[in-house]
Image (cartoon, rainbow, N blue to C red; front, side, top):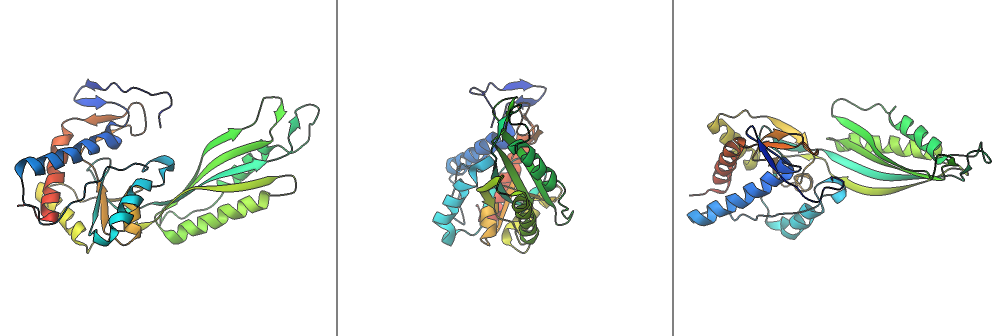
Length: 292
C-alpha cells in the first residue's frame, strides 16, 4: 500500500502512536491476540466455540480472499462473524458492495509530429473517464464511482498506443450497483471502434448486504454498548464482514482503538482509547458467546 516503505518505526507523541497501518489494522490484530490470551490465562468457560482467524486480502485488490476461504471452510458451523477493523465509534452492519475493473484502451498511436491526427489512447481514455463522471447516481441508497489509476503512454512526443484505467463502482444496494455497472458498460461500448480497441478485466467483486437487527449478534452489541454508555451508531463500510453477510450469516465489524489518517503515512492511534476498545470487545464477546 505504501510505496518504498520497508521499515516502520512508530513514534509515540502526545498520547498517540504514529505509524502506517497502526489503526488499520495492526491494533485490531493485537487486540484479537490479547483477547485470546485473556481467555487462555483466565481459563474461562465459553458457552459457544470461537474460531479466531487472522486473514489476508481484505484491502485493495485482495478481493476478500482470506475471509472467503475461512468462511467457505466453516460456513455450515458459523452462527455469526465479527470482523475487527478500524475503530469502535460505530458498528458496521451494512456491507458496501463493489465491482472493480481494469479497462485497457488500445489505438494505432504513432509519432506526435509525423503521425499527427492518428487516434490516441490517452484521448479516448479521457473521454471515457469524462463520461463515467457524468453518470447520475442516487444519494440513497448511496452509490459511487471512481477512476483511481491511469497509466500508459510512452513519451511526450509519442501518440499513446495504450492506456489502462482502474475503475471502482460501489453501492450498499445490489440493484443500484447493477444499474451503475450497466451504465459503465454502455460507456465502454460507445467508445469502441475499428480504431479503438477496449478490453475489460475484472479486478474484484465485493457483495452488498445488511445484517438483520433481529439477530442475536446485533442484540448483543446493542446491549453491550448500552451497558457501557456508548452511542449506538450503525454504519456502512467495506470490510471482511461483506462476504458472510452476503451468505446470510449475521456479521458486524468494529475495532478496538480510535485515531485518524488511515491509509496515509500520518496514521495514528490514540493510546488511551485501547482501554475502552478492549473493554468493549471483551464485554461484547462475553455476552455473545456466554463466558462465565
